[in-house]
Image (tube, rainbow, N blue to C red):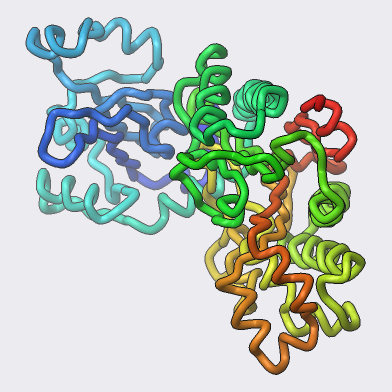
Length: 444
């Protein structure tokens, strides 16, 4: 798989040029000035090209000969004492299959042998490292990131298989929490159940800080404390996933802790679900992400209007950006080696200067091989709604008495992971989301 990734990158450079690509992998990180090691996770571009999830490595790609040089640290007995077995050169060759294997201090020697006219680096720090070895090297810190972004945004079948496995385990972990939730549990207890399923299936690295939010906490978009009690009558929002060999899954479900939706919970939930389901059916090559976002926003505003929470013509509601008061984030993002994966904004594409949609993380036409999340949501955030209720224009559309009843409601978000295919989509997510299915699964 990684050889295909390198070939994909090679194809973007001129065959006749005498250039090279240089990337340093990640190093071990420590907590402040201690020897506490954070769990190691490789830099995503390096992982994409090599499959190497080990610290203190580097690569050089010879663009003319299309050779892959892997550089590894030279370990001594002390390293073996503290960290375990030191892998042999033969192990590196058999496991990662580089064309050439070197120790890390041989970078300058290899560069001199290749004699590149230009070396492409990811950032100024890596360029400065090379220039410190050889002042005469010409470096380019702009072209490589663009090329790798192009490669990574269109997934190969091998990548999709890893994402399907990450999704399979994530589906199971979400389902297990849904079945075991009870009023009175702590958010971190539910996180423990979720993490146990991931670990039992061999997925040890979380893809991002998971959100396990009960009640009002579910209206905090990046809530990560996960230390409150989930009470009877609360909605519980679970937004979490783990990686399979670096590739992420990102699923969100929201449901009542006691297993039964109230009328208000059901109506708001159904508005979000209708937005999710209709948008997913629209996914196909050529569709624009911003059009999906605005469609989802309109569907959710229709649901809030039916529930008597907002008023006015739907065109006026949308024109005055009322949707952004309840849906303050983007509809979705690219997914891959990073949860918020690369490629959302190609060069020359700017964010839309409009409330709500300005936070959309991907603005481009969909193509086969892209993997996106679709995650509409409705949130009742007093910090947004109170000023709007006092605003002369916005207050015309808001039913104050009804909305204030919901200031402790929290929020609802539902998120599926979607592969764009030649003729539509593949949904990687298989966790109950219809109201009847959720109530049956929780089983009270």
